[in-house]
Length: 235
Image (cartoon, rainbow, N blue to C red):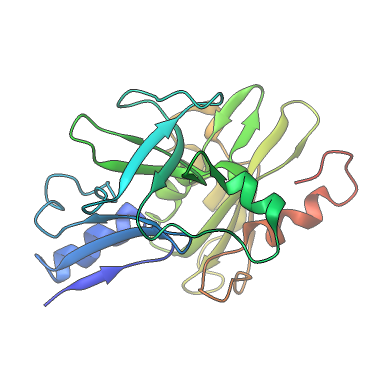
């Protein structure tokens, strides 16, 4: 018996609830259709619950910095990988292919780090990172707090324009029961629990559902687009 999680990574709150209800069955796969993956085995979950695992045999992974240098364990950078299944390119899109595949390595656009044992931890999508007052703010860190509220079913945090900070976080939220908590109450609850001042959300907005891709992933760019529509800086 097994339970597999693929696609968008699960928040820790959801992982723990799932494993508590059905222990010893959980596998998580982080993968790109372009030809790279890591797997967290059920036997590794108890000691590495926040990880998405390690590459399978014949798959290779690196964490690289802005200039392509390899980063040591614990440092956040872009996840790059290669495998026998690596795509040859995007159909009739040579420029996009050149951005994604460099020197035989697939650049994922995802940020993460590895621990001393080589296990991968996802941080966020590079394009979803918020730069607020010169500080890198990772939406996923804030989302991990929000989903702990008993009234919250799902959330998406993204950056909106700020005259003071350049960008500031905003939380879009789907409630389990509409009206169970006000936006102001939830905002204050979040801001009391995040780890740093720069992670405090400017506001909470409620939505009935999120726009999603064909695979079910939340399309944050669609949610945040109206906030940036009249700005010189585009998302």
